[in-house]
Image (cartoon, rainbow, N blue to C red; front, side, top):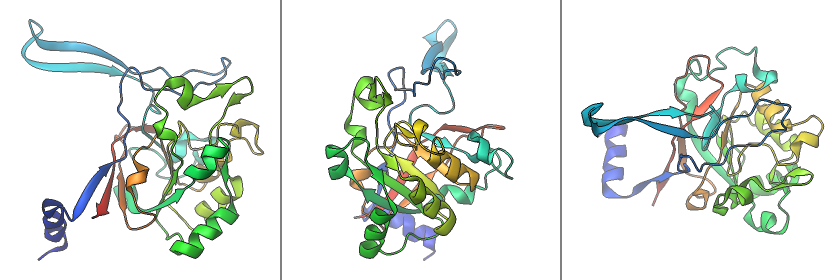
Length: 258
């Protein structure tokens, strides 16, 4: 029996489960707020082309308008200035093999419940690896924070007088993961892969700066990470093949053994 036949049989038998890590995408999907001096990304707009009417009697379809980085989405290296000159740095040029990899899930839900600005530090990484083994090359590193349980835009973006507040990676952890562990990229439940207050870090937005400068990827606005084990799942995260795309909404799937 071939490996692919074994995969299909495991799916059919229910011994292998597909977990959807993707948030619903629609007009109510929260979009990151930037200061007014910068260009703003629009929310999702759906306009009907036809719906079983005189414009199309037997078919229904829509026009979709949104920014590339809306909802559960993929950040390509060209998204950030540090990755703009790298080869194969766009959604249409990244080799598809790089969209699939083993998942390492860092559970910080307890810490985030106490501190919404919690940062996953190198000490936290060392403790995780002491328990679960070294993060392998080519892994998707997923930060499980429980943030996806926030169902309103205000709670999800969590913007206060001094800016947004949400958890993320310490800048040294991002460096270790990108340079020493050689991961595919990182994934988070929050609206972006940096912590909410990261605009004031040195350098600003260090996860974007480090990961994309190393040719790595980002996945934002994930959900259902509580359904994944710390290790053992496989994640498939393939963006739309947009020519010169800096990213795109995507459907992120995980294969999990029962």
